[in-house]
Length: 466
Ligand code: UGA
Image 1 (cartoon, rainbow, N blue to C red):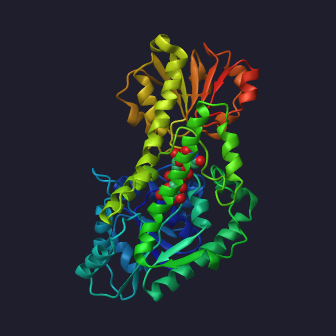
Image 2 (cartoon, helix red, strand yellow; image 1 turned 90 degrees about the vertical axis):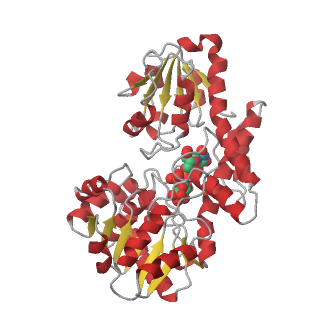
Image 3 (cartoon, rainbow, N blue to C red; image 1 turned 180 degrees about the horizontal axis):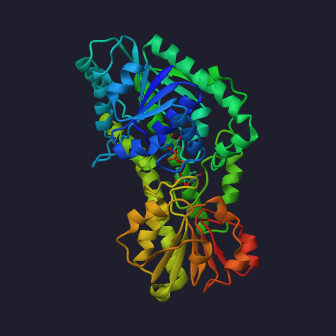
């Protein structure tokens, strides 16, 4: 099949790269010239495991065609996937401005009947009529519309696109449904082939299991497809993200009880997570959730629910608990040093909102740096991939030092805080690093380090609720 992917962010470029690697001629369309130029050179504009190999391979064999031009892409394709951003507006509602612009441009360039427009972007419930009107105003050809909400997570985007645990198709068009099933089945066949190659599998799955149990390969493709009506498919995405955020906030709320008692949150969560009705995935306490999706989708659902007569107070509390985790970490630092805090140098390990990505949008680690910087003499920061992105967000702070390596970030520090649990931070040589520090104190806001090892080396160790 020939496809056009509109929007070349994490979602669009990963989808385009996977489709083209599976043999489908794919145009990646974006309005940003610098982005298209970078992709044309065979490189993704952001870090995502294995995406660099896919993009370089498919751009060079011309299966993936990056372009600024809808006129070039749409007449040559059968299906367009809308993968543009839907950021929260000033009130928190998801803005569909870019979706509308994309659908207008697609519709204007459709030359034959039966083009399919698939909306992968997260849109609010109740967007269907607006989209139909735009299409009708801009083309007289027969167009089929479907929603196919996306569940890929950064750090495992290629794996999630190759082998999604469910494929939601929301449409009233049988033609669109059948064509999409054919396309996704071909991706599934390709995925199973490459995932069996050990080398490729290891690269693709580098961060796939960060918070999730293994993909269940025994579930046949057909059982992973779920056809729904349009409205349901619109609501599914925000509901899924908000539920996951709620699960994490629940874990953090329990951690806060543990903070003031002898209970250990890791044991409590393990104890409940073994109940299959609850599950252990996304039940890790820590500094809280961030990124380009959970914060905007939780807020978006609170706002969207209001339009349908429901006050989603539960989700407001989910946000409050999440914000509190930063205060909790800062209070730990304040309690450790009291009035001496303004003379101290603090090390922060990790700046991205989670391991496996260089994305620092709404990163809890960045919030922590901004907050703590007000109280301390100096903050030394290090991240394996996201220093450049962090620099843009932290440029106004004058007591921040960007370290170039691990030794540098630990040198003369009074306290190290693990803020993002990159695998390389979990296997550091603390026996050596302790000699570089002024004081051997660690706050592990992701409960990921080996407490016993650190304490036996003489560190004072504090986690979250443990
Ligand atoms: C999330 C969803 O997991 C995807 O399914 C969805 O497609 C995507 O949003 C999206 O809407 O596009 P993502 O934001 O990439 O994916 O990252 P997650 O792996 O979900 O992590 C989100 C945040 O939760 C991170 O800050 C992470 O550190 C935190 N987290 C996760 C915890 O604090 N505890 C956990 O147990 C799990």
